[in-house]
Length: 264
Length: 274
Image 1 (cartoon, rainbow over the protein chains, first blue to last red):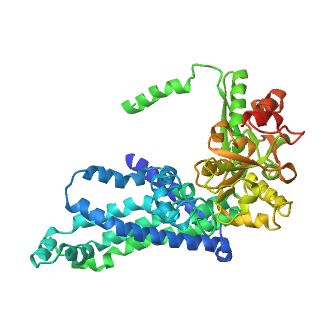
Image 2: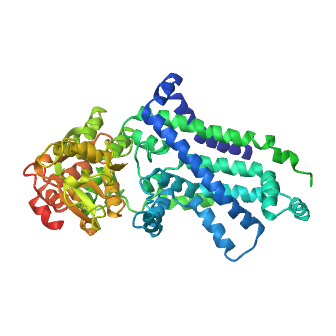
Image 3: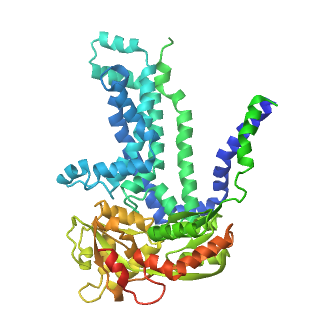
């Protein structure tokens, strides 16, 4: 009895998640997809999405690595506060993130006024899109990187230290390669989150084709005037997201980091 | 019966057997974002004259509301900021009866009170580097704004390519008029084009208004209709009767809208929005 209920509930979830995606794909013929993809509006949004999400990912990795390392290796005052701060964008509604970014980096914002002295303005710019994406995507990388660092056996770092490797060398030559699968998975999740970013982007960076109109914005706005275009864009985004997830699933086992890890 | 199920049933009893026999009714009004303040006031007065009735509003860009209605949203009344999106719903056979035009609205340009780009006249919108925010073309106010800019091009004191120059300065195309207001009010944009009625007293504290002269203004027309899917058709008709009544028209005008027919200059509205 219980088993049947469990199966029914499980099947309901599979339907809930699977059916919308399946219907989306069934609405578009491959020929139409190819035709539509060549439209400048869609190409532009796709290009902008790829450029900004990759830039956001690079930013998140560069800024996130030292933070993840510090959170993992050291105890310091305010560590818990830092952990909460870093996890916050994951649970914050993206539009709230957008408003917060405006109050900080907007023209009248705290940091915005300082940036203006250097002639930098973030709202309504592609740079603003990258900032919005990095803001929401950062927790995914930092979380994965922390988990990855935690998995690495300390004795390798001790060995590196005993061989007089500088901490920086040990970090780059020992820790990062050993944690590579987690780091890559974290980067991929961040990338996927950046790619899907909508609320913070439209609130903070606005909506301008070729400048700030990324794929999710294009989908949302196309839906209001050209439903077919919106569906095609959605299928495209779905394909990209699916590719990311499949790559994450397949990649770790083939990475050198796993192979080199010694048995405990 | 298992204890958990018994609890569930017990908990369900008050829900299944309502204490008040008359079910409280809800009226769902889907209205253009520019109607927010005026309609909220009208909704309250309808609730007062119809005890037990709850009026719920969904304010958004008319294009978005039309889309939601076409996809089966539970709307009783649709009030659009242009004929285009009302026609779209009419063509889908979803309107009961004929839409009635109940109001009009003037366009104005707004700049932040701090006026970072030092915009003093409409001509300044064409100055290179000015950050202008408009609604997207699909949004009624976006279409009207582009029309008005087109009419200004070549007018006395305006260059022939005025509208192209202004459009080249657009840094964002917003999805409804309230987002345009917000971007200007926050001082992020140097200027935007919105409806007169959007410059509410609370917005007026943060923005300066530049009038667009009548011959070049593109006056918005607002049709309203009962929808076939209305679960509460009587209340829907009552709401529309209120909106088109002298009392309703007075409320609309107090909020900066124009009467359905007549002079384009809102004599009454000018005083309320200094």
